[in-house]
Length: 136
Image (cartoon, rainbow, N blue to C red):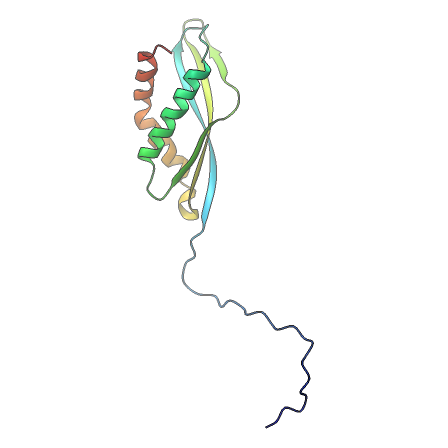
């Protein structure tokens, strides 16, 4: 059968529609987790130096990198704001806020903070010993 209208149509070509499948789609998300490193049993006049702060951040980053769930990738460990000082004369406390950025599958990212905290908690005593050894 012949085409009766040989002139091209001005209508746009329809876009193909994706057919839904039962295959799961895995998306990667980046999440930021606030974590506090609390130093206790300090002298009241203790002041956390920039050098000590950098050491703590590097140490925490190393702990997380070596102990984090294999499905997650550590993107950054950064200083999260202002130091918080408190406590009594012979038992002062300094709280170091950190921002920990992690990337991984969306279904695992809900648990990323748990993995980060567990990784740090398991080795935090090593950090305390290192700080004492370096006399920070």
